[in-house]
Length: 92
Image (tube, rainbow, N blue to C red; front, side, top):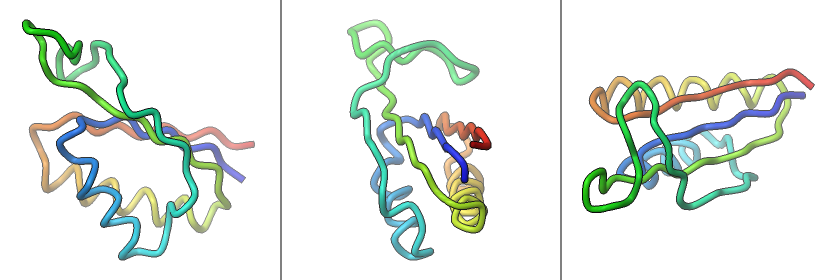
């Protein structure tokens, strides 16, 4: 079993979730709708200086589903090259 955390720009949220639906993965998740911070893609603070915001998904799943999630995230990262999309995994 794995815990997957995905932190991404809110502009890619709909596309990412549609990708999960098509691949039949990631159907059970916890979503934190507004995540602020600074990463490699720059600040996301939701204010007038740094107006963008991120969201976060937390998914607990088996290894096979995790592989499908990784593929969808990789496809989205390839398509949205200038948007921040990060995935982190922990083996449980």
